[in-house]
Amino acid sequence: MATIGQDIDYACQLLREGKLVAIPTETVYGLAGNGLDEEAVAAIFDAKNRPSFDPMILHTSALEKVQPLIYPIPKKLQILANHFMPGPLSILVRKRDSIPDIVTAGSPKVAIRIPSHPLTLTLLSKLDFPLAAPSANPFGYISPTIPDHVYQQLGDKISYILDGGPCKVGLESTIVDETDGVVTILRKGGVPVEEIEKWVGKVKVKERSSSNPQAPGMLDSHYSPTVPLVIADLSEVMKKYDPQRIGYLSFRELSPDLPKNHQFVLSRSGDLQEAAYHLFSFMRQLDELDLDIIVAQLLPEEGLGRAINDKLRRASQKTHP
Ligand code: TXA
Ligand code: MG
Picture 1 (cartoon, rainbow, N blue to C red):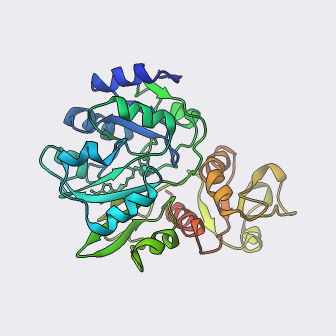
Picture 2: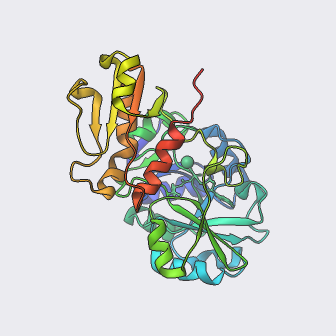
């Protein structure tokens, strides 16, 4: 089983040997391996049970370090990089041949990100290769935001979990592409759409689509708990289900009609950042209760609320056998 600790040099050593290490970031925990080593990347796909058409993000401590691996960064993405890196933003850039095709699932573009977690930034600065790191969860399940989440699900598949405490943002990075001068958000995440538009003007936002998994983070049944999750009026669900068997993921308030310990409030003060911080952890806690259904409330469709609602909608898409 994996050990959990804060030994950056040990993590470096394992990564240099081609092994996998779970790393903290401000968004979610990542399952990291040498991004230029095909075998290490293949081991990540394996550990996660992830389909090979789903590309991975490369993590670095500075864009200059990956410069030899990519073509020049498009202008608007460079502006975004200047403002949001390190931070919860990933940019798509054309890759050179030194980045193995397995990383990008054959796409000519690679996603690059500089995470803003101090432990991981130090780790990355000591390495002379970028780290491929998808979220450290089995494919299709909720992303981990504390070391224990990683340990529970992937502990038997990796050697080490670098413990950086709970993830401050709690939502994955926002992924942006620029094609012919047009910026498109491929995945809503920790940097809100509005923040991006402040710097590069109006952008396109790719909405969910199961028929076109071009950015496979766009696959509908992502981030799903095992217990069915629905976005619905609690009163409607109570007509069909025993209130003792319903879990509730509410934005601001408890419901008087359900057991208190089956309910999680994302932010009593209505703070979207706090809601994002709690989201995945509360989804997991609800999933661990013995319930028939989880009812989730949508948040205001603004700022981080857009990304949170996106996750909730996806979680509600899972087809349960
Ligand atoms: O916050 C994050 O981005 C976290 C932390 C660990 O950095 N990572 C993360 O990775 O969420 P992952 O693998 O769970 O999700 C990455 C998604 C892929 O599912 C895919 O949709 C998109 O990023 N992606 C990666 N490379 C891409 C590419 N070359 N073209 C299009 N989409 C890409
Ligand atoms: Mg993921």
